Image 1 (spheres, one colour):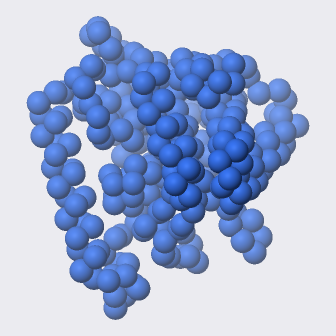
Image 2 (image 1 turned 180 degrees about the vertical axis):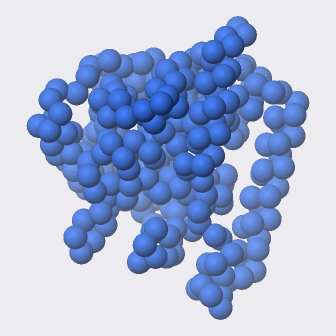
Length: 294
């Protein structure tokens, strides 16, 4: 979720430069209430501190103080510019719908879940969640940034950060991580990182279905699942090739492995449900331009 670099431009893709409609505002409020119940920070940072956990208590305390300071800064920004609150609410809704559809409609296959990040990893490392692919005897992970924008500059900046980490020889670090079944608790290192996103218009259109009387049942066939899995595949492909060209064999191998895994999931989804829809929004098209995959 975007909590930084706000320039007072309003909400991307559906609210920018105009007043939102009464229906959009109604959907936004209802969907945000559902989002708060669906996808929240369940990771208790304090439980990582010794003697309960293995982390240095002083370090955990410092990290929690950093989070409190950043949250306060965001609250002040929101008070000065109410449009920032809309950005946050739409981002919250997108993250929650993504988690819900991955869990209940198998958007990324039947053995995948989206685990909310800790507040520290959210605010400091800009990781909104971790895609956990449950494999018998092991697990695979992708760190995610969930983005609601269609700004070319914003996407270029984010892709640039990922590539810089590859050049520097380090992938993402998830400092506070715990599986829901408690089978793992600690730090994830050298985790591939990608961006999954949509523009605000698409999010609000999905949210209207998500909050209807079916509880989002028909989102199982929504075109957004195709956009997101294609977005993931094309990033993993680009970052694998980029890492290989920069001599980072480890990163190239990790991104390449995840590309193949996601491609298999896409093929399996198509065998079960037929060809995935080909609709795409402005976020997808802009990412294609930035990655040079048009």
